[in-house]
Length: 171
Image 1 (spheres, one colour):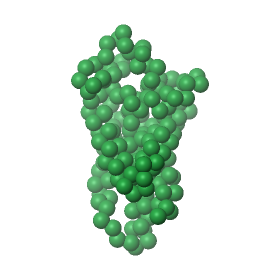
Image 2 (cartoon, rainbow, N blue to C red):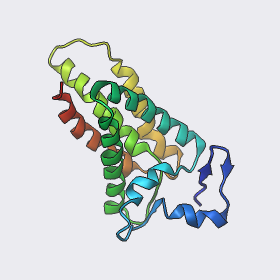
Image 3 (spheres, one colour):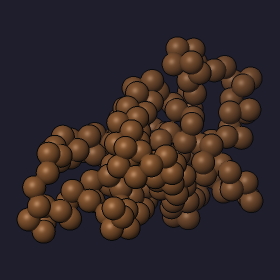
């Protein structure tokens, strides 16, 4: 079953599972489009929560420094929502929770400027090997955690790369 975590310490009982279930994405959302975003705030393990939120914090901060407050918000909502929408479109019965889609969107969105710059021969001080390690951890999360969905990560990562290509053109 789905074990939701509140305050990183206390598992919610079955009496509150139905209330949290209205936020989580489990099956078709029947017009409740906000669940594409709210499910990203529900986690089924503390380790998953720490990994995803650490990546969101790191790359959200880097994106904000590079482009302004709107860039991490755009990548979180659009990238995370795209990942969750891919889950609904291709696997209606899946339960998908957590922020791995948004985290991978932020990683992809931040890294694209530096990847394109290196392809053009420009040097920078970005540690893309470290970025690759974080991305690999996020991609592998569905192997260890039931609520993390492979399709969500794929959709979020692809959305982040596409948005990152646009962000790379900005000053």
